[in-house]
Image (tube, rainbow, N blue to C red; front, side, top):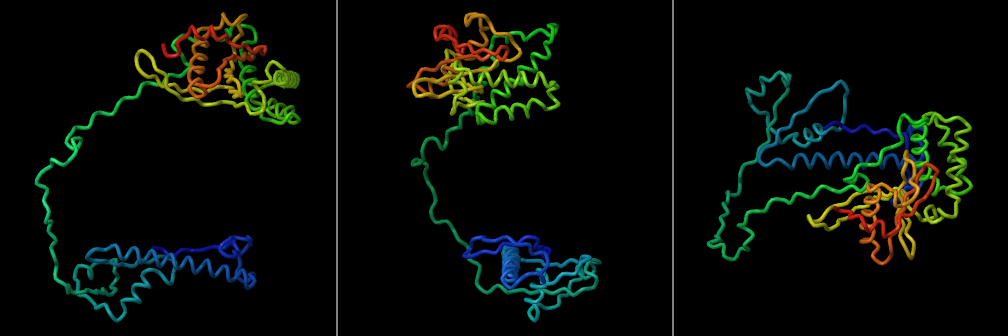
Length: 346
């Protein structure tokens, strides 16, 4: 093992085992006595570890231990080979070994051997107790392990069995801009509620002016004002109130006629209040319907699934569901009776 090379660009001075002061210790001649003492402690600890590893390496051999040195372009002192060679001095004898002596890598160097004769007799331990019967063993010892159950495929509420409602047609005027606008609003609604009121305008402006959004100054100002106005609307106060959570992962299990179904999803906004729970999902790139009854079945089943899982987590409070359409934007709460019509694990 190569001798470790230690550099001292930074050096901790410690007191009672606690690091107290960090100093620059590149040059030894620049150190005062206190810093020099700290440097020596580091070197001593490093040398002790280097020797400990040698002890570990040498005590792993069961019957024989072969030791060989190696040369490099750099000379080094106090290597493992030096320690071992010094320890064997006067104890090991020059060995006559034709095979090793002929090895060109030895370059004519001496071969030393230290051996210890076997003094104590070899003892054989026999097992006196034999197990004659397995009657006392539990039955599962001989039983064939059953195959591991295959877990059911998780149900993802955001990808239900119904077809997702079609997005705004690409043939529609400014359809690409509308989709991009929805994605930007979605991101701002995720970040800005947790931003102090006095900094929301600056954070929104910094995000909107990124070149990847391809927004001019007028569009940036309009989007920032629209989102901040949405956050300040009394109707949405609970959704974006302090303590509300963004991008909340949910995992649960719901029973169905076909057995348990695993549920995994992510709620865009979750509001936990003392008297109720509100789950909100953002919909971008799609126009909001006129009434909750016109909401696509895929969305209704999605929110019914979220409600069912959250009801297991919060059995003492009603769980409400709502959709926030970024086109507008507008918030639409889904009536309980409407969600009741959709089995989340059908």
